[in-house]
Amino acid sequence: MNKLGVALAAALLLSAGCTGQSGNGSSPTTLTYWASNQGSSLDNDRQVLQPELDEFAKQTGITVKLEVVPWPDLLNRILAAATSGQGPDVINIGNTWAASLQATGAFAPFDDSALNGLGGAQRFLAGSLAATGAAGQTRTSVPLYGLAYGLFYNKKLFREAGIGQPPTTWEEFTADAKRLTHGDQWGLAVEGSSITENAHHAFILGQQYGSDLFDASGKPQFDTPQQVAAVRQYLEFMGTDKVVNPSNAEYGNGTQALHDLATGKAGMVLWQGNAETVLKANGMRPEDYGIAPMPFPQPTPAGGKHINSLVAGINLAVFANSGNKDGAMRFVKFLTSAEEQRKLNKSFGTLPVVQDAYQDPVFQTPAIKSFQQVLAGSAAPLPQIAQESQFETTVGGAIKDLFAQIAGGKPVGDAEIKAALSAAQQKMATGG
Image 1 (cartoon, one colour):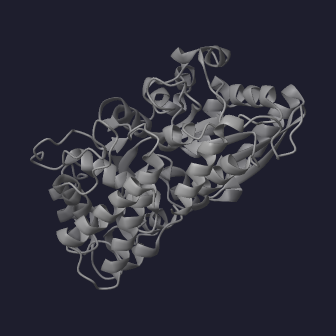
Image 2 (cartoon, rainbow, N blue to C red):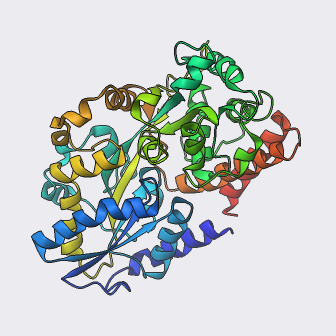
């Protein structure tokens, strides 16, 4: 088994006995909190969060010890903590992992009583609340930040290329990307080494091509013709179309592609709404870039869906063996309050997940409304099943390897893509 499989299996074995004191040294007056990297850097996250943690301490007398965990490390860190019992009290998780982490049994439930303590389920956006655990089971996380994918483009480079409007179809997108590609400038920047980004694009494009990653029984079906076609389209931006710099095969920290957009090295990126924070840190002003919905194929492939984003976002979870569970729940209530939702989402460029936070005019901008419309009308949640995180690591890792092959000059076509996706499917089936 790979590390993920070992960690999940061990965590499942621990689930029945995950009680008592955790190894985090928490007490009624302290909490430990692992936050995901939402800002332009780990330091930026600390600068945003620490004043709010100080305010929480002022209100409650509870000191929160913060660690910001980089995205490439976060899932494995969470699984290791679930396995060992040596983890924080409160943690950020990608909402696509909600059902997978729920299956470990390591996290406290948010039943009706717990949700009522946060103001009730009706406070939360329905789409975000749906991505908090498997259907029919008591959720073990609640939403914190809302996100959706969109197309970010450099207005100056568009003007220089004579492109008047952002593309709405993939055919237009590819044509525009080719016009933007010349010299040291590229049409598109991607994070080809990011397992998470690769998996997300495989899902979104797969939906457009009519692919379902799992059948009705939860069995993986990664190597269907539809999914092969979806992955091929993403890889061809670097391979056949040659609108992505081959060096992007090594990009994976969540900021490099956005740096290229901000510095004029790339004309477009496909990214979540929190890109604005990173673009600002790289000197790009809001008037320097545009935001549009991610394109669709035209015509729509047989069985394809009008989907151009996943229901993305960050959730909060509490470890069941927290030594200060009451304090942890108070902290969750604090972070999901209307005031904190306004402050934090404003700082990170994300979307509030509670209805009462949207009264702030800062969330009435065209960009925010665009992302809200995508979440409401053309976004789909990744399957809320226990195997979802394994899909991300296996399929996302397979696409990472395929990008590396293209960057190394090796041809990658349907046969190579199908073989890689079949291998990922086999890993899922065997737990390897």
